[in-house]
Image (cartoon, rainbow, N blue to C red; front, side, top):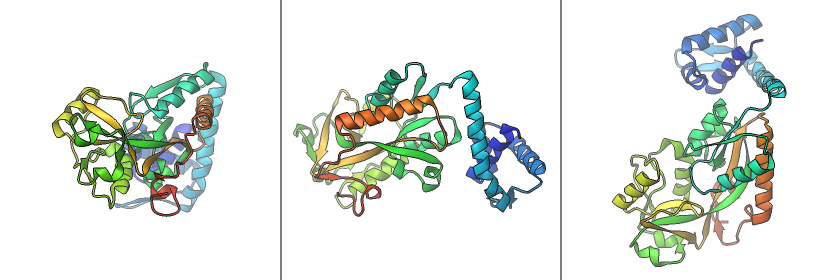
Length: 316
């Protein structure tokens, strides 16, 4: 059984859409349809029920899916055993100081023979789809904020509860405070990535945090790429920006931690289910070591987490 045929089948089974599956695999839709037909002919059964509106797995398609995933995983292991593991592509979200960068740098020390290549995809919503499609291997972010169908295709583990902060333009009244009480943002319009399709999980977390506090998310705006553009847009709008405490310092602004309560963003490491790589093992060891050394998974008593991480409302 050619791995290409199984790979095409799995992509269509996960997307339930031939056009999206073809784009994911970087092949023509006609070629993908031809490969699926070849697989159906080889197995002597239909794998998809196709209508003008939908694509659904047949019973035999449902039966084949976990088997195909295991075969493809074994094929990757076989290739790695004789050629050595390929470079591991690790998305850090942004090119700056971050928890993810700290984990990556420690993992490189733990596995010096592995090539762990950094990528900067600027948002877990986009990066997670790339991980599921096999174009990235690992990413970091708020995994519980992903679409459940996408999250079901991924494995994830907690790395850190990151305290949140606010980036304020110079001269803002709250900039004089050493820390900003969350309720002090009432009446403010705060930028949270609205309008950026790559960061839907972050915008959703912010929306939950702001609910009932009188804090308005800033309306959608063109996405600023790069530190210079981000600084320019911030100076123009003068909107405070919701960030993590490790966010890079920018000229013309001040970063202040949020308190009363301390809002926490649950950062997870995300990878494909069934995927294995010595670099991934090193990332796990690095995350475990950092959590033990720095208390990254400790939850302060006066803190806030999203409801997906608590038994009830967000305050916990």
